[in-house]
Image 1: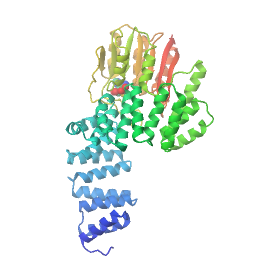
Image 2: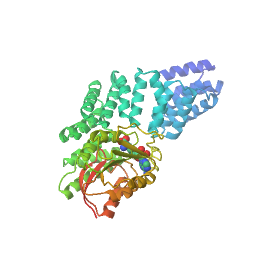
Image 3: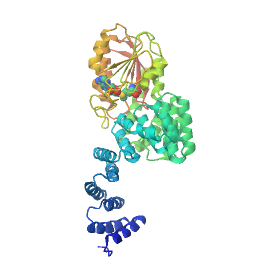
Image 4: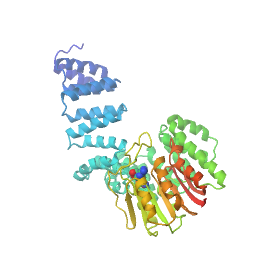
Length: 484
Ligand SMILES: C[S@@+](CC[C@H](N)C(=O)[O-])C[C@H]1O[C@@H](n2cnc3c(N)ncnc32)[C@H](O)[C@@H]1O
């Protein structure tokens, strides 16, 4: 037991130990203070911090839980608890603690920013947008709020709306400004504005030259314009900037394999050592190479989804149905409708607007990609059909005899893709272009869009040309050549 015998003396000594980062000693004095004033929330909070810093995460959590019980209305305690639970990987508990922190201090930005990040991680980005919007409206020049709001809009599939708040944050020096610029680069790429995206990523690097993210992004830009040597060099640079960045290591390995370089195997070993899931990208690259050999020509590869969509649409017939299955916030459908504004009968977008009907990936459960029933704004000539495919599609197909010219199938899971292909099977014709947005290159890809397409090929005796097979964007595009 420390010698100090009063609450104040214990606390003073503890604070000195904390300032000197002597965490074990700080814990002893804080426990002595607590013995004199059990349940004191401020002491418990310091004790949690000191215990965590000395490697006792579970005991830190106990201290915070005790403090939250004695002072349930004190938001910072719930905030710390949420942060700690997040670090411990207990995502649901962290989310619930952050909700309490936010509810007990609804005007404070910090708990709202934390809650928004956790909602985004839980794929509830639309809720995160609604949460942060009033903070941004009240503080439009605050760089921290602008950066968080912009990043949340981007995660929610609203890159065009994210650009303005990110511009506010981009004027900041150092890391916050560089992160904002990198996010702007991602928004612009999502919108298909690749030159502007390159400029934003280069500006991010100018602000913080060691940042791996923008280097990696510039690698994708290089891939998008077919410059494989530059893409290879960029991914290598991202890897040097952060040797633990699995995506940089995997993308570099993928380029080495596509370039048929000897060091690909070693690079893959390193990438898969960092993240075993990267083996899915390796399988996708191998699938691309096998397809090239089988068809006698290499299918196109892109760095960003809009480029593949434009490329595939350009090869679809002008006449016939133009559809998208999986609209969400309308990002890809708007791009398609802007690229080919006046197909006969217009564009048709189908979505529940309630998200996925069942789980797809471990972190993308039922309800992921919900817009909470909100239909996105669309240009003239785009018709939205709200509801589950199995309910809306059979009726729609009866309203027209037109064949299918082009479909962007972006509904992720097997059952939904099979519903779409089943309903459309009678409208497929020679020349129909089918794009699958999540065809391959992620763990479990053979069980979803890929599987539904293989079944269609089997059932209809489809012969097709693979227009694009893009491991980095996960998309595939096929043009039907013959069918029975
Ligand atoms: C990844 S999002 C689409 C993204 C969109 N194309 C974009 O570019 O932002 C997948 C969408 O598919 C929809 N979806 C999946 N299965 C569905 C089904 N069976 N019926 C209706 N909508 C479905 C979800 O609601 C979700 O909006």
